[in-house]
Length: 168
Image (cartoon, rainbow, N blue to C red; front, side):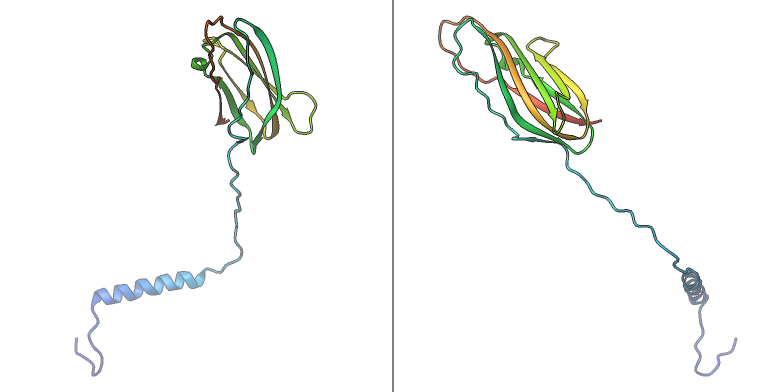
């Protein structure tokens, strides 16, 4: 092939590259936007328990005595969706009691009566209870029934109840 004045020889790689670019531009030019789809979203936080630590006091209890203490509304539980809620009594913290039963009632705002009731007992099988709780805002009520052990010297401590959630 002879050279034409002022025109340099084009390699086959350059020709392939130019054809590829022309094909891409041709496809892009052939596409005409006729609409679009937009997918919005909002991510809600997990459950909240407010206040996150609730401190209650049974007061001074005589050795060997029994009693019931209704603490009433002590916290608010807010759920943006349905969740499995678990209340767990820490058995290691109930050693000074023969009996330590906790009734936890969740009252949904605007509804009469308890929506959910959890019963925790200081036994190997009754210390934890889980339920699927529907979305909403709940007032958390706690009542404790107890019998303390006989002691010869003053003792004090703190019984712990943990609150967990799991997506249902």
